[in-house]
Amino acid sequence: MATVKVKFRKSSVEGKAGTIYYQLCHKQSNRQITTRMRVLPHWWDAEKETFIAEADSNGLSARYQQQIEKDLLCIRRILCEWDGEGRDYTLADVIDRFRTLNENGDTVLSCLATLIDELKNDGRWGNARNLQRALNSFSDFLGGLDRPLKQVDERLVMEYEQWLRTRKVSKNSSSFYMRTLRSAYNKVISRNQMEQTFPFRNVYTGVERTRKRAVPEDIMVRLQKLDLTHSAPLAFSRDMFIFSYCTRGMAFVDIAYLKKEDVSGGILSYVRHKTGQRLTVRIEPLIEEIIERYEPFVHNSPYLFPIITSNDPEEAFRQYQTALGYHNRKLKKLGKLTGENLHLSSYTARHSWATVARKHNVPLSVISAGMGHTSEKTTLIYLDSVENSLIDKANEEILEALCRNVSK
Image 1 (tube, one colour):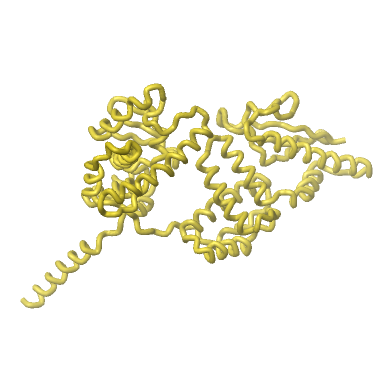
Image 2 (image 1 turned 90 degrees about the vertical axis):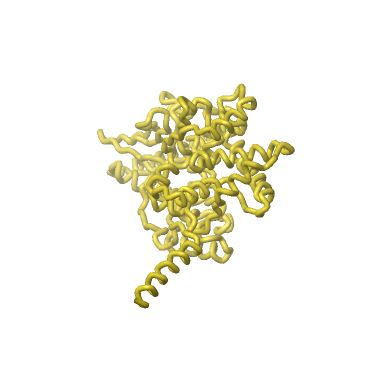
């Protein structure tokens, strides 16, 4: 009779999640069934071929253990049935039968929920949040009713896109959902070794350029000069906005996670959360002034600014999210205090630095490198369109030259 064991395949990257697989042996032949269960090394008891009790905080290992027991029961029933019939079978036959029986068991929403848990356990909180947003939207479209993965076809995805359109979801938001779901779908399909049908090929997954709310240099000066001694929260948001501008548009998430160890020899060195790219910024006087202003508030903290206080990764991410929302609300108030009723957000500083740099004739390639972009096309998204007045002025000069030549 064939045998089946549960095995753990370590990741090639030390400390990263490995994969659970089932090893089947029959007539001196060995085959494997790779699952979509990704497990951190310290969760798994290799000797007992089971999860260590309470190995993770959110119960993912317990759900995985239930899935393993369900899969093993299915495989053993196949073996008992065929052995009882005296059937001559191969391990390939067993695997095909197992996959056929389990094909309908993989459902869209449950698979996405599992991926979200895995992202959280890998510490990829931003990715988990994005997938959760996409999952919530797709679940609303499905009316909360889960359905088998094989039913995710081109027609269903296009119906979802139309559903988003009728609810006046912006083109870029719709594209965000599609790209996020496509990436998750491809990962699940690859893990489960299912047929790829490319259901997302005919929906919009681009990025439409929108009007950016960059502010000119005089507004940045006006913000710096605001007397905010009456409100420490407003002063802090103003300082973080200016700090972002001075550090070539550093994202708020990167500011929040900056540590004192990132500052050395007059250089600020950090890794962008969005891309994993390391960037270095020379500490100019205004940057140093802002850092020193908040030193008394982080005396016993490893962080550069008083935004994150927890050492727990999940709680730290929640603190960042809360701080970002609060920061943006304060920026709206600051926009009104400038006298221009400006709509400021954490990303306005990033767009503003790029736009001002271009107006100072800084080459696009330099702006792109400064912002940590891998493509100049991405940088163009951040830049305001050239002002109509400049285009009109250029056209005026061209036509004046034409008229002069005609009159000769």
